Length: 191
Image (cartoon, rainbow, N blue to C red; front, side):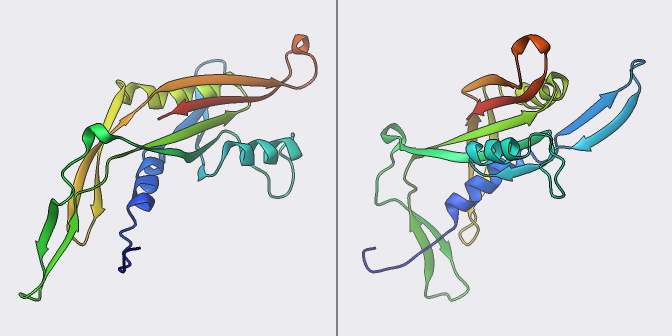
């Protein structure tokens, strides 16, 4: 656009940064005496919520050769919204001296956008869901600040607040609700 191509991979870096915050979530299972009998990392993948729900509904017992493991986390960037209240003067430039003394690397002031992400937690039982959510919620009061190197070529690092806007849960029952057979519990966290 406007005669020059550029690509700093900024959007890609924001998506990776968001996903990396949830890479190390662990679920533990205990016996009746409170002894830890099993522990496992919760897998994380990028993709729309519907993709995971369709995959789970196609194999409700999750017993196919290549089955989806539960619990599982899925996230996606849902919207980008311009925020004019944070707008800077458009001709401001970030500059860095290059190895060639006659040239400067630069880019203009960033355009202020709010990125909205959705994180979904898929579990079979309530205990797994509450363990996962309890490992996330204490860090967001309601925000958590992360430093991102948006443009490594210019060494531009920004502190980005990640704000937890809402937490909702839904339970999809198999059969009648009276028999207590739970099919799937989903926690949706909006950032």
